[in-house]
Length: 263
Image 1 (tube, rainbow, N blue to C red):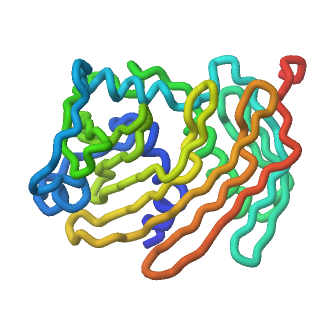
Image 2 (image 1 turned 180 degrees about the vertical axis):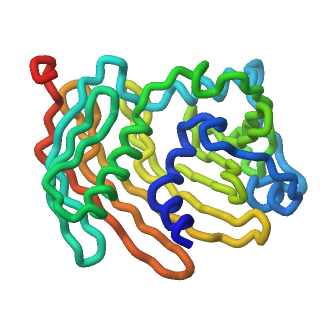
Image 3 (image 1 turned 30 degrees about the vertical axis):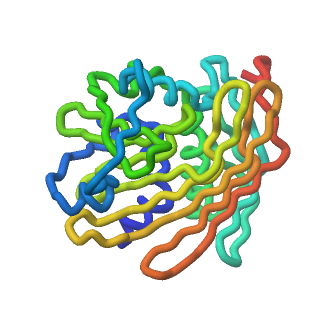
């Protein structure tokens, strides 16, 4: 269960933006999995736009996400990390290459947790060209119960993923992660002139052999524009695993974009 806790706490949100090949996903041919977790209905309704390919529709939504551009200089911030009754305060530095440094937190485990949490925020903001993230992938329309969304199936080698797109946003991701299934649903977004940011989403982690829900989490994020970039000011993650609920919280203050002179 330690592996499950690690995946639920730190790794699940990555499936939103990383290419399938990065997750080492292997296709599992199980009818019950396809029916229950990939949301295939017995009598599905097609939600296929006219005169647009699946690749074009997905690419447009992918490129509509808000990301930090190639000139991103990095930033610094004070951080407060809360987990249960424990409180930790320190400082973070996100470098232009999106590497993360944490200082001022003596507890090694807490310091690593903060670092992992910020890395996940940063990786969502990484600007990865579509041709790189989805290289050698084929796209086709799928079918879903909800006629307001369009299902898109991405296939390439052993890796298969299913997405739901609505209003030019990726609102759901379904992937296989080894022997497990991951379903990420976007619950709320923030619109910016440079694209949308998922500010609230639910990640669910299933065992494909038993159909059982292993764990889930709801992440809530807040951003503020500092200089030319939207930076995180708060993240709250509510975890549910084996009937147990717990919460972690990150608060960021004193945010400053790193100046070119500081580089």
